[in-house]
Length: 486
Image (tube, rainbow, N blue to C red; front, side):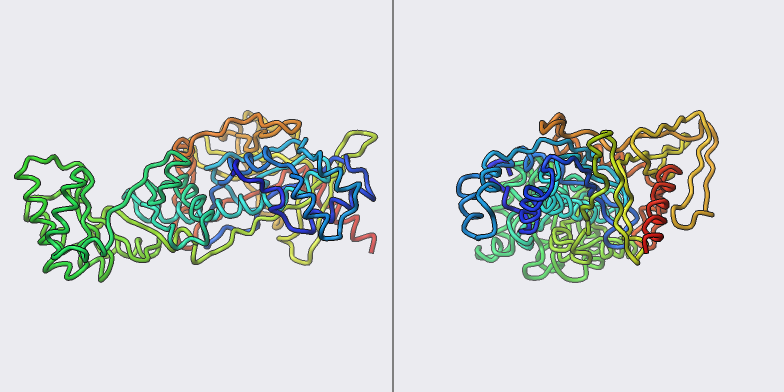
């Protein structure tokens, strides 16, 4: 990201609106935009926020090169005074965001941009592109890792990703959500994450016979010897030949660090159980039995139920593309405009006939409410910036649509955490991005704050995202004011 100028990675209308603001409005008018999404992907009970590091890199590198300006001039859409402004463009605003690896829910601001309107408008498309993609893949990966129930999950999707960037940053997101390694060597280099892999069927086929291929591989990689056993006949050839090689290694005194077999076709439940029996009888009870072959969380869960003896999973296409739910659906909406005279933000709201598409107005914060006893999430509370809640006071939560649904929390029965942290101040990044493996550790702790009912793969329990009383009244007053205008 830092080596590419992505300033023109935007929709044309962002630039035409910028010129409109430049010509018709005060270009320095301060506004607030929120990034949020409306529903969890894949019928999940939560999502995982990812992509913030790349957002930071993008904003830090925002500038219009001469060739960018020349290109925009060639379209015939932009006037010279505006193009001259772009020559000197630099982001000068504030950005708040939920840290990567955090469990998130619909309708709450993942990113809040406070900036002059032209600057805030320009960055919309790229922010959504980055956050939507990585959050989608992180969420999918979290489901796969959950289904694996403690077994290692390796991300193997590069060759099926929709282009190099999707493969690289998809691998990053998958690592955040709990994968133990990736096959993507460039991602390993860029993000300092473990890279793992075995060999292909072509390795076996290139030798005179399977046993010779196994022996040569074991000679080269004795401490990472996972042999692909399904090139010819898994149970009659592949597993017996792998056992022969393991016996030869044992007799030669070669220590077994990581060794085992990989299954890539056939009935994985049946084959793994038969292979496990053969390996155990030969004295290799701790051998890894790895599986690949178009896996996803549903199939992994099914194989677990069938008693498959697989303890390592390589997941590719269905993870890196989030095949069953290929988009995240994040949006970027105007929430407030600053009054120049008072310095206060005037709330703005987008109306819709669909209640879920009506936006939450104003300058907002997010409070996460935990059970003091269990540490689990009770609800998230979207409120107005500056609202204070004290843990030694009672707290009333209510559904913002079906307001008769209420939860009363007794004093000292809960704890509160602010989710949004400041990333940019006056155009300068003030946030230190953690390493990917540190984000992974944080994400694991975040997932542990969910109730089991919210993590199940089918029909998960909904974690409620409520509005504070003050924000709810502001929103409804705005709705009423528009109603009376009609």
